[in-house]
Length: 63
Image (cartoon, rainbow, N blue to C red; front, top):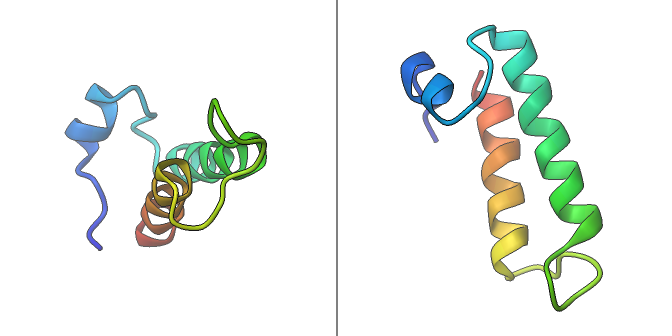
């Protein structure tokens, strides 16, 4: 997976600094995996929140 461009990331509300943006993605993934969704307490594999958390982790790795 390719990392978001800096312009796209800034338009989504993330930092333009790569180190800060990597941290923001990891924090977002951790929060999604821990808190889960509206109907479940934790993110079950295969759920939307789990998939989004995996996307955040992939973005952090790609930076």
